[in-house]
Length: 341
Image (cartoon, rainbow, N blue to C red; front, side, top):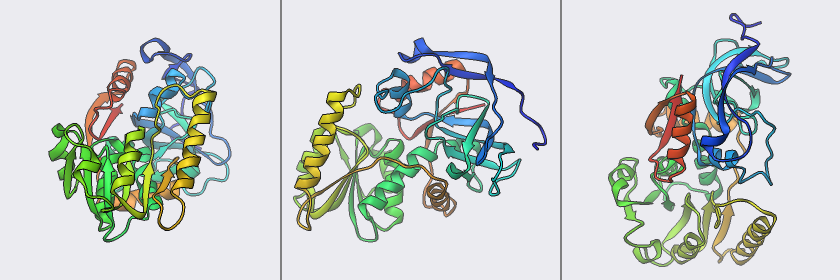
């Protein structure tokens, strides 16, 4: 039993239907607190971070893939304190400081949320809740990109969108692995990307990747931006057998049956075209969050090789959540936006 049991109801920011952030988010004073089930851990949320996917899901752009039952408390990235553990959980105890990408159930915008124990990891030593909340989704995605790209010592890597949430972590992880890294970003973020460890920085608004870099000169391109042009430029700069690793799509609007069919067709065609030892391999990344992967992130953070850059901290209130989601939606965020209680 917890030393300070959670109440039966809580204050939570909830989504009431699909639509624009300003229209569909509200404050509930009586959102239910559920006791953790088998394999679950109840967390008192102290901080939460926003990601671009949050706004898409709130607006309903991904309802064809993931439907929500309302009311729903959004935000996947969270950090807090364990208040209760469910049956069968032995890896966490009441009072532990933890963080997670609560990949389906969200709840970062609530006071208490249940998280599957397999998604959790302890907060990295020396880190507060704000920084820890900024890590899970972006850092696990970045690490998956490096794994799928087989980035190691001496690998030559281009990171497109190098100043964003995933991009700035991918730059650091690649450098920590001993890679040579070129970051692609806007001119206003040039010094920031250099400070993350990039060996060179290209202004995406001034020159495209294929014009700035020689043909067949890189092993891996990590795309955090999306759009067909990224793939076109990458094919030029990748060596035979190189890998284009992307977390984005050509189209970033509402997912319909037609757009899903186009996406599947595009992925299939590019993978077939890039198959073989001389091809340019097309590698789409869809994150599968896990506590094991997050522990690997923690190790890189605790070693001092990687840190999350929090560009802005807002209060974990209804207005704070709305402002954070709107700012994230501009696509101009440097690092991460985090909300704190």
